[in-house]
Length: 252
Image (cartoon, rainbow, N blue to C red):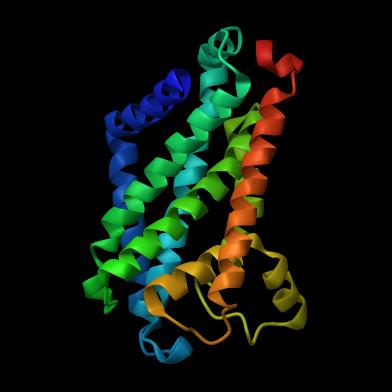
């Protein structure tokens, strides 16, 4: 646990000391929400809501996704700087490495989402203690899931540019087809089918249930929670699998 806490602490301190990254991470979701809400205001009302209200939940999911991308890229940087090789030759269990890095990235995603959540009244989203607690639990699971996926992919990559390309290829379509930006019930049948096998759909759906109640076209809360838990468990297992797999990459 000391190794896990040390790696977790290193990720948090590293983020807080990087002022451009800190500033961009705080302002980016606000800019995205303001631009999309302003551009599509009055264009359509998904579920009878103003688009700003609808996209607010999608922005929370987007925060966890983008934070996972930028947090797990440190795996590649640590390998290039030699830090990762030093950790690998230490007596620290490899599972502790995966847990520390994933918890660090997930904590950052959750923290940024909490800060953005303070803007809920401006978006017309009413909050109560029960909703906030339930929503934070869902956000924590979603942050663990996407960070675990990002960690597994970063561990297998040698190039930061290649990593960004792969993450954009997989994770952005997952976010777009999850219902975060727009409802998917009237989408093309092929995309509608992809939506139901997309694990992000259930994370976004659980967030909608937590903060907005029942929304047309969203699976039930129990289905969304089961899907999100399975997503988090699967990506953590994938991260543990790749970190325990020894290869030449571990020593170069």
